[in-house]
Image 1 (cartoon, rainbow, N blue to C red):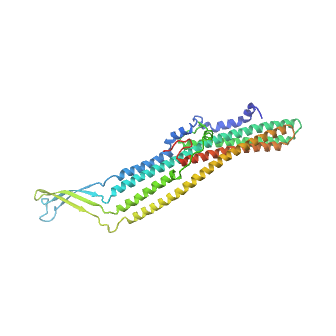
Image 2: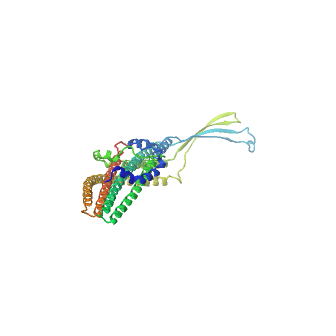
Image 3: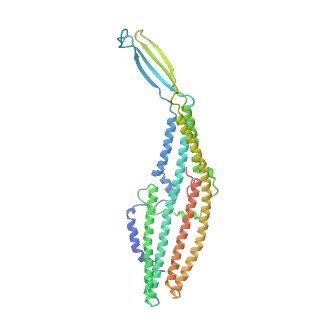
Length: 419
């Protein structure tokens, strides 16, 4: 391998390109640790949209408590007609108040339906926040994975540079054909191009993380390593599928739908309007009270369509609840299986990586001694690069599986409950 000064010289053009790519975010700051970033992201547009849905349901619940407004009327009779009503002397003026009275528990049903809507909205918001925390953790981890891939790519460039220098030395001493140095140089150019692509992927990951967190100026780095933090945490305990957010949301929506059926049924009950007023009799110069009651005749509109629609909505909600329970059980079992598989894969890739490192070391010794061709050294180094990538993929899969199980438990990847 080359020394660090040689590595810096070989990577100088790439470093300049990376600096140019990040010039637009030079004034940005590193992302804080994940838990802090998630707290700060409560002001992001995504979370605000979830909160607005809750506030909308709360507003509807407040409105459900309102009673019908009274109406007032003022009208006159027996004036400006033929005798004896050709003037205003016999005018009868009436001031009247009409107050609708809701019967059959309409207001109570409306209030209960409104409260059920608030409960469902809050649980939907919690589920949305869990999903958001999961997506933010994956975006955070994708930046770290991109950083690791850059490190791997830089190591491969460094190793390929050392192999090229060795091949040139052997060519100069007459122990290798010039073709070998050209092969090594081609390999180095390919790896340098791959490094540029990896750096671009890191920038894209930072942009996605910043946008998801609701930050206008993109982050430049991360405040902590989720991979290291998760590797030191024990496996999560058992998860009750019936307490998962998706099931609780479906239960709340089923309850809200059931209360809306009750509300529509009660809406078919006729309301009574009480009438009370004062009449002024000009001819007699006296006052009199008037009172009455009016009841609509439900001959045509009996609210049947709304009742049928609400019943269909309730059946749909119950079907979605049954589906959510099945899906929750499947997600828990699948999530635990994926985590076990990911951790087993991580252990296996660790052993594979150790073997690949030893293989490359021996292949380089053999090539330096002239006991093996360059093609074997290139193959060994390629196998080492693949083993490093697979090891990183296994770590990423384990982190993703842990984040998914945390979501199913109603937690963030760092263990905080989501409200």
